[in-house]
Picture 1: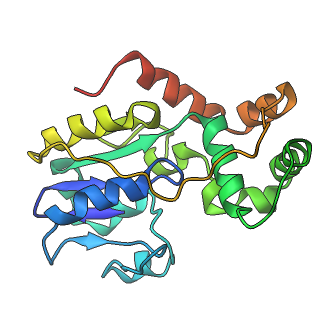
Picture 2: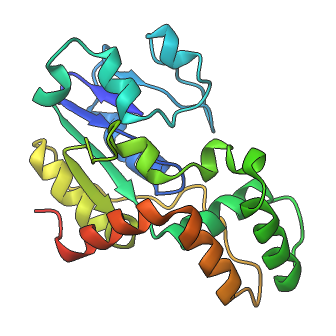
Length: 211
């Protein structure tokens, strides 16, 4: 997460949606009094104790709004990036298991086991994207939502809204697919069931590009 009082913007870092690329692009424009929290590659903690105690940078919009003085959230441009739920789930699984040598059939079986295990699904990387960007009624509360599949264009449009130049995004923290891996119908159905709200959000975004 990044809360930039100097640029009047809030970046809600949804896991596995290019968050490190966006952080790197936004950091040169931050003031010393701006907030950032992340713990991968380097540790930066928010000065708000309740947020710092989370121990990672994937903080929900609801928690960020609650940490700001009343009305400030509404006066700032809040933004996040969403990703196709199947692609995101696969990416999260492969990142968490990056030290293992998987073959395609074993990868599919292991992914299905995760989707059947509520305890493993509670990991922050597997949390639904809607949990990060929606309010208590399940409605988006972030000003602008971009899509990972058009990351460069959407981030450029968002930066234009906050009067920053379009950045050259870096590819950071990727998780390549194992050779021959292709999601089967069962995996697709399990992901669609688990992340139905995320599919709805992404379909809505595909209909309208960020301006």
